[in-house]
Length: 440
Image 1 (cartoon, one colour):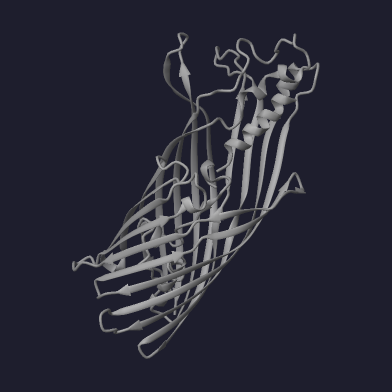
Image 2: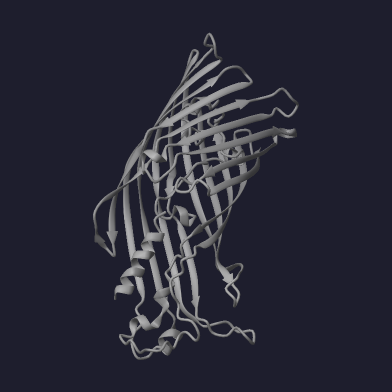
């Protein structure tokens, strides 16, 4: 029983951080909301043109040229994860890292918003309503646990257990945006100011399972092998505020700024259906600064650069503040067909050596005069090390025999024990995003 309790503790210790195992507990902050922005590395603080662009800088709402606008975005994410462990020869020498489990899963997200603009002389007032996922907890992990049987004669060692982690849920933002723009000021061409107010609500359901196989149960007939099933759910409730400004210095240069103070999300926790102590998730203050330059050339090029600072150290002393850098370029070819590409670099606050560089590209075209379709693709890869998801000692059938003289019937040569070395993890991300914008 003591060994079983130790294993349960280890399982929860390694899963403290959806799409990726790093974001499994605290969630993944959603950053890009339109295909145009995503294709330009996420850089849009000073060059937002649609209602969903205003999520990152509410002042951009007043840059919409039409009186009314609606926008819808769909994203498809493919996440491939390989976990490796060190492989040693018979003399104890390191040979290589061997992949022992691979997972590939797909996830979807939806965003939508509407905006209304009204001009009075050299001033414009704008109002927007938006729905968007704010934090995502989706993550899935499947692993076959095999014994040390022979792999000769084109056979595989027997599966003795199945491991699973299934997380599903999100915190969604129901957002109201207001902005104003003043034209023809003495020192700048336009000045825009904006405010965002978001009600944050959502839930997350997670399940961790270790299920013994029929083969294992048949081999171990003298006693019962205990399955492990842990179910947890969380309900979220919070509020986020953001302030933003956009300054168009002239027809070639613009600058943008947005700031959101620290946000607290209240959490109601349930373990196996029984409510436990409430907790909270703290989202650190975020400061974003962006610049846009439009050089004079035949391609009507737009260059965007964004820098974001996230103050994670104010939330937890074990975290580091991080900077995120985004760069995007758009060339307009013939027939108003744009060619866009970009780059984004971000690191992890728990370990800043874990970097996530992203390469992006995309385009768009008008379906009708008022209906625009945009599409983007983003590819990212990162590698890091982490403890084993499930402690190996759990699969020692001798732990459950109740006898010190029991000889394992599941293992032939080596009784499994917990590994001290960490897994090497390689993650590949592919995101396809499409946006439809209707203005009139």
